[in-house]
Length: 330
Image 1: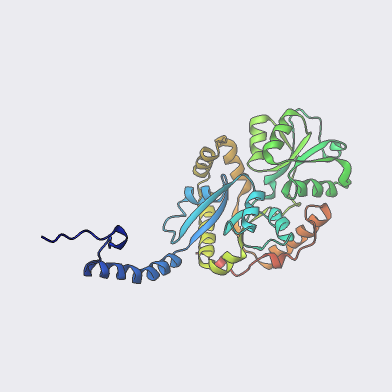
Image 2: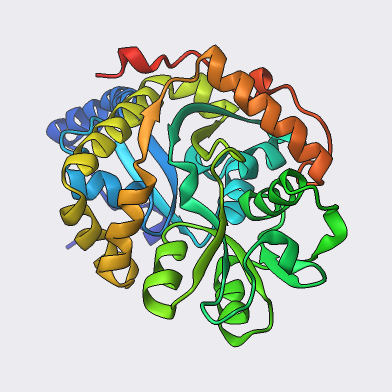
């Protein structure tokens, strides 16, 4: 009897392909380009969020319902790290204050703002402690005033001093972010603090601070949606849709301030009553990037160079993509 030994393992076909298997494999290969095209047709928008900001607005208002693209959120404690990530193309879009954006744009970052919201300038203020003897800016001569560098805090202090006829060195500028400045202010390490809502209402309601000066007549108090130029080229439909949803969110918030304050306070772990007071004072609403606003922003940007907030003069129109008109945002 003749016996047949098995072929060496190296010669075996471990997965013999029958006709059905071959057809299935071929179909999978043919389907791969179609799946790739489908993935490209439904883009993911990478969005930078500051806690208690854009994401909470869209979620609380229900404005994210039916969004036709993926959303990948990244959380940041402040505008500066968000703008750093956006400049590096690690994000497509994010929200931040006007001067923070202009500071980064002036350094050559490949970004443009394409949508704007505006808050009442009273939402920015220079605070002093309730028991402090200061009654006007002149009383702060030689005192330490905290505020963020390259943003609303630094700008507000300089603009207020200028309007009062005081020189820039009338006070000692102490550059601190909000968290560090709050501790320094409450402990007495600084004498005053230039800050914005909701911190203003929290300090007044919870810690007895007083508003020495607010931003009325001093600052535009505008915030932007800004995007990387690659997203402005490749994701325009999604960016326009995000703008529309942001506007709907603020329209909803204006009519439901207690509901929005409750949602936001729970998310940020801040006291609800001051948060609601902050929203009432801010009166935030979407505004068009029209000629009048751009002229106002150019004037503020020029003053920011004088104040040392911006390193060099910028052309505001170059920093803005006006291809997203607000009146078409349904």
